[in-house]
Amino acid sequence: MAHFHPAQEIQNLQFFGEFGGVNPSIEDSSTYTFLQASRMSELFEKEIEGCYLYSRHMNPTNRYLAQALAAMEKTESALVTASGMGAITCTLLQLCGAGDEIVASRVIYGGTYAFLKNVAPRWGIKTTFIDFRDPELIENAITERTRVVYCEVMSNPLLELADLEKISSICRKHRVKLVVDNTFTPLMVSPSLWGADVVIHSLTKFINGTSDTVAGTICASHDFIHQLTDVNNGMLMLLGPVMDSLRSASVLKNLHSLSVRMMKHSANALHIAQRLSEAGMKVIYPGLESHPQHELAKKLFRPEYGFGGMVVLDVGTREKSFALMEEMQNQNIGYLAVSLGFYKTLFSSPGASTSSEIPEEERKAIGLTDGLIRMSIGLDHDPEHTFQKIRKCVERIGI
Ligand code: PLP
Image (cartoon, rainbow, N blue to C red; front, side, top):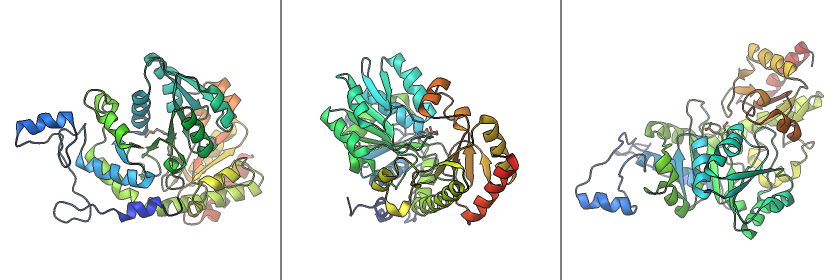
């Protein structure tokens, strides 16, 4: 593991354009011609190197991005999708059918939670939600019908960490697939090296980084990626959340600056989290010693990327959180907006937005209180200046 570095793997790739361009050409076609009709029917049976059939199945431009993401996640293969939710739902429906069960972390992105809680049961798939900070609970929840264990490396929004080493050994023991969402921690951690079978990202966030695109990826074995694109049974092929090639070309270009962006997001987030904590605010950040899983964070994360760009503040009540967010936007500290990984700081109240799908009593049980503000710290030049501005807003609101 010591010699593998995901940023180096991306850097090592060479994709040229049709005329020697330094960026690969964009394949602007939904369908492809064949010289022989027999070749077309062959392609319905099996993949043929360099041959394309139809862009919902595969597109050369999407393949470049997928290859870069597979190199980054050290998986055999990868696919790109029209959204992170497209990646999550296709993966879970490929792995599970009627009567199957999923053991999922109780703290996950609200959309994933809503899919597992409300939609997957319509396919006969049952999910047990567990506190993943205690791997023993995961093992106890696995039954002979369990096909998938699902979690986020760093959970949205509470920034709880999954001990991937322990969880993957439980999965291996019970022959269950471990599916991990690495959206909050790209480059910082390589879940496949800790034993994850499938690694998912919402590319919409840090990886693209410009808040202009919704996109996703599934990184996994050749075999699983083939299953997803199979013309008869593949969820990606048949449900159809395919990424547009113009978009995947732009995500690939942004991927090349991910490493420097992650370093700056993390350095700024650590500074702001430390200063807010010193100022007596209630702060959740895995880089703080007060975070209950700080030691696990040090074990999982590559040191040069620190502890990530997400910081959570608890200001006590929904009213105060709304007032502080509005004031921070008025002072141009950032934008009151969902999503993350942008150059500008973005903040939202998870209980009233991205986690509102989780019923109130469950939110209370997991500690997702109404006073929380989730902040995606931007690429600000001077984080001390940003902290001073936040401090003034906090004083003005009277928190
Ligand atoms: N996973 C996580 C952790 C997320 O935060 C989100 C979106 O907020 C998603 C998945 C869904 O991704 P998308 O919005 O690209 O569908």
